[in-house]
Length: 114
Image (cartoon, rainbow, N blue to C red):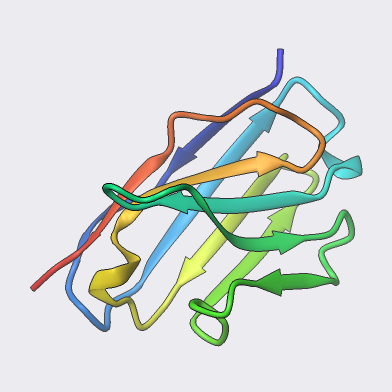
C-alpha cells in the first residue's frame, strides 16, 4: 500500500537549517507530483512546497519562498525539503504526500526555538 515515511525533524535555533527526508513506497514514484505540507499546533494543515515529476518545476508557499528548497530523487523514491533561515513560526509537524494519493505519513516534528 501507499506509504510515506518522513524524517529529519528536530529542535533548531532561529536562523538554523534542517533537511527533511521522505521515503515513499507503494506507487510509481517517478510519475507522482510530490508535495510537502505542515501543521502547526491549533492550526489547519497547510501547503508548503510542490515539485513536479522531473524535479524541474517547483512551487512554494509565500511564507517559505526563498528559504525552503524542495528536491527529489526518483531512483531512491525520496523527496527532500531543505529548510534554511528557520523562524519560530515554522514550528510544525511536516508531512510529504503524493499529489494523487489520499494517504498521509506520520510526519516529522520541527521545532524552532531559542
